[in-house]
Image 1 (cartoon, rainbow, N blue to C red):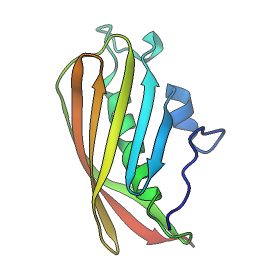
Image 2: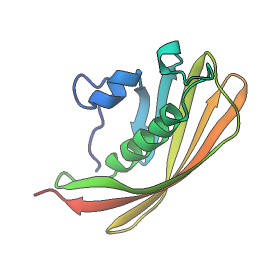
Image 3: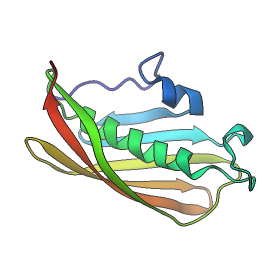
Image 4: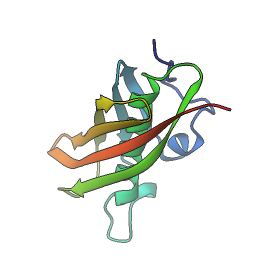
Length: 133
């Protein structure tokens, strides 16, 4: 039985709150994050900063792993690779993340970020799993 990841952060994930990221689903190694694009998150070229999309994937991966952790376990990002396919200027982004493999000490995940126009980015990541002290 995994840990429960809060759908509404309420202080659980301050950075996610800062960028407006919330979750509509998080269970059994899967998460779905959602974010309404806001001009405050644009880069100088008037498109969504790539770091926001990366943060969606990173947080989505953490949430998916979190849903499979025992109460005495924590996780942390080891590495993430992301490929950007399209710029974003408005609308709602969704990030679907699936746990591909969970071992004793590491987990591997895949994320897809989409909007109404289609695929925005894909990411893969590796997470460390360790005991809380």
